[in-house]
Image 1 (tube, rainbow, N blue to C red):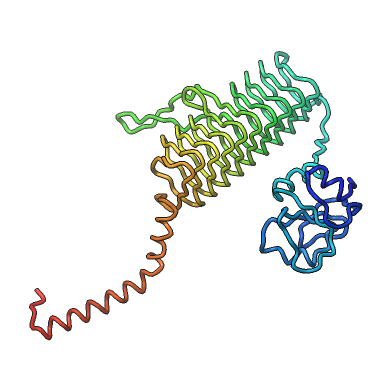
Image 2: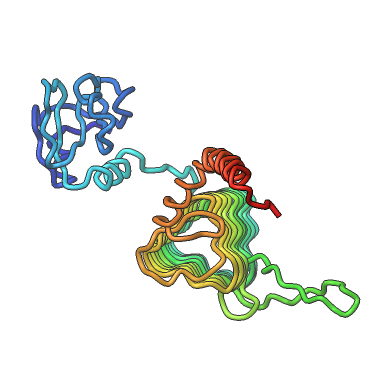
Length: 351
């Protein structure tokens, strides 16, 4: 793909500062770029690279004003990172290399396949499945009985979608994720043996959801485990039975959400966060990585950290004291010695 700086500015609604005829052939990191690359500056710590980069063009914010001579062409945009995403979609369009339905796929005669679907070798599609127009299923994907896959959704190699589940349109699910496996439900009898509780619900994933590799989204005991529109899940995430995740929430890798918890809209969950069962997380909450959430978060747009998680401001104050504990302990010992010496000089009985 080859475009000019002005072409890029037109796509992004930006302004060219420099040569609008600059040729761009691809993206590159600002510190490693070569001629023909377009890069970006969204973090001020990389500002110096603007003056030394070999990139032919750099995306910068509308308010960026160079403090030194710039030899590259600048393209000013309202939001650099959002504009980068749009640009990478232009340069990084994926060629799936799959066309039509492979004769090495196993498709039940009752399944309904939409127009322009791509079904790779080794895919298994069970009875009464519906596959939407333009969907792409990579090798070794399994689609269970009665499941529905939406328009233009992509399931990468090894994805398993178990019976009765629903996946919306324009979703992307990466390799080896399992959707609709049984929830972790067992009851203990008088002999302290665990007996399986059948998990008869399903999983509903709405439009524009992206799920990373090796995730597990468990089906509900009854009803549905629901992931709402626009949610983004990283790799290695566990979502237990009957969990509901609100729209446009993002969750980083190795996080786990226990059964029946409700996570609000626009929530940000850091890596390795654990959320206990039957909790409610308010809209817009931010939970820092490695936190353990053991109680409801009721305040919208609040920040939490620690195990058990507490308000981020309180955590920082507490951590400041924690760092000083060795010095405080030493001071305490010194004070105890001084008090003991003072008592002795005054003849005070230690008992």
